[in-house]
Amino acid sequence: MLSNRYGVLKTVLIIIALFSILITGTLGFMVVTNLDGLGRAVQVLALIKSQSLADADMATLIEGATAGMVQALEDPYSAYLKPELYQDLQGNIKGTYGGVGLLITMDSEQRLTVVSPFKGTPAQRAGIISGDQILRIDDRDTSELDLEEAAALMQGEPGTEVVLLLYRQGQPTWEVTLVREVIEIPTVEGQFLDGYPGIAYIAVTNFTDHTGAELGQLLTELKQEGLKGIVLDLRNNPGGSLPAALEVASFFVPEGPVVYIEAKGSSETLRTVHPHRVELPLVVLVNGGSASASEIVAGAIKDTGSGQLVGETTFGKGLVQTVFPLTGGAAVKLTTAKYLTPGRHDIHEVGIVPDVEIKLTPEEQHEALVHAPAVDRDPQLAKALELLRP
Image (cartoon, rainbow, N blue to C red; front, side, top):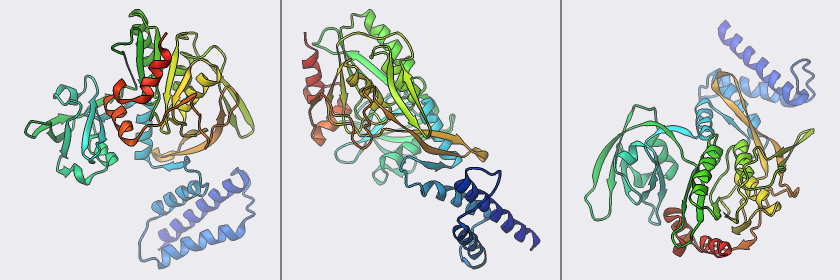
């Protein structure tokens, strides 16, 4: 009985401390002005412990209270991250995860389909190719899964196994057992385009810790082979690391400001981070899926006149989030600043309007994703190449 009372008292004190931080910003002196609100919180805690049929332990209640504070901000980009979610986020930023190395999508008939295997991964070594359909993951029928659930099932601890049932057109289904490895997600791919001498198509799929190095290596190789112009594809790029966006922008814009950051009580100008600009004709492809870090790059290129933007208005996420680690392996992600383009444009909930607007049908969007780069199936890419013709 005494231990229960101690637990309740401990939780009440924690709640008081949390409210104090919210109200005063400090734990130094707990001057609580919203006594009614604090009283309600204590009442709810007492009622849950004494009356609720559902039996929640103190740790669960504290976890819920912590998450609830962040939710009360009504900011879709702020979140309380449980330890497992924080680990996933760190993996995304670092560009690595435990898995088999497949980029997947749902085709027009909602069948789980391989876009491509990553180079040097278990999936590629097993002979899986673009267009293969995944019918089952272990004992789960993929027709019952959404894309995120399917991806999560194939991920896991390196060294563990996952069994896939696959189908390739014109062949019988077959099973393959793959051993998960640490997968380094390639974020940059590029190649010269047939029929367009010296013109390279470069796709950046997201921004991780190694995106800048990947792009630098690719540009060095392309220049050695006679690079004369670039189509930079940022479509459906959801963003990612701010430092990576600075690195990527620095390859294309002149020395100077890339983005202005305005935080609570402070402002900062982030400038180009290296002098390796590639001064060649440039067209950037964007659409409604181009967000955050990709908008920083596109906005810097547009405002500095370093290239032309083709496609559709970007998503419009002009906010910066900071992740703060907490005790116990959790973290909180908070919106801490907004950013402006070099021309001091606030693009939040507005987006960046391309210089040449070309909208794709849903079918064309799917073709551009699965078969990129395919000039005959992608009007936005075709227009970019038209602009790059001498």
